[in-house]
Image 1 (cartoon, rainbow, N blue to C red):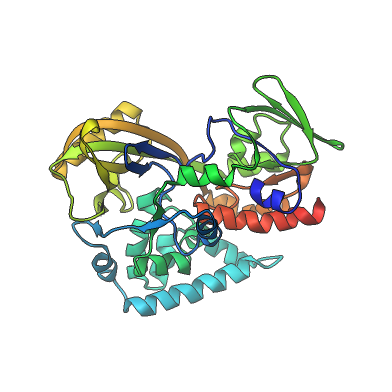
Image 2 (cartoon, helix red, strand yellow):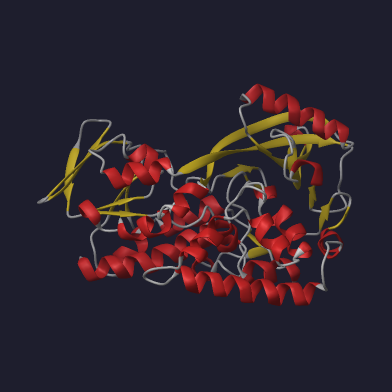
Length: 400
């Protein structure tokens, strides 16, 4: 967002609470090993960041073979009910476009709003799209974007766009060889980024916005962009009723990624995913999938990155569950290297959608000298947030 605004000629200051940029794009480096603990794959939807990587001379490497529930992933997708996969893809695309066009109207019909609030599994079954349902077990729940019997259709459709589906079908998922963390460092290199500057106060008035950081320093600006979760933002400012309503309309999911070393585990594919952990009703805390990510004798041998839905579990409990799951699936953990617990995927309340949440997300932009981005207003994925920001800065430009 900062880079785009600077390119339009604005003076921008970025306040970053951490000691480095990137947020959930957290890369673990050790020797020649580059392990993505947060943001991982780029798809055809990552048009802007893919171009930036090309401009920065950062090569991409493809994701290797994936296995789902012990078999080839595409074989699992095709095992779903309903007509042939090409027909289902075309039906899904047409129905997705139809609904999104209706929702984009100034006054969307209530029938479209009701449809948007429907769980995606119900929406797919009403259209006999069982193969797409199988695809979403991996593309949605497996990467912590909610169980398909709970996540609203409008959010599932945002992420599972045609570019994502085609990326998966043609096996074109890619990762930056030098890591996402290095990518964001280069993107931010010429920007005014204040690292280790946690914002404690945002005072918004008719004459501008005053930012206060935890060191007590203050600085005044014309406008502010909220790029953190709204429930955290309203704690540091005199919030509006609409801000509080939107913050209360979402439930943040928890996602935990853990880097482990394990012996005697899979080495014939890049990713193993497990159906028992992603089907609706599955117990949280189970291992969703694991990705083989190199070898380091100093750290315990072959390296794997595993994901779990956090639920109400503590960090030690999640580690214990992960060790048990790896053992169950044939591996032997030799070292737990790093665990990262993420506040992840802001899932909309169906009741809030029916009460006008989607319109509220649009109308709040620019109010109180404030603009809003991030997972609530777009989607958790880098591609969607960056594409959303590209459109948002154009709206901002008209005002600024």
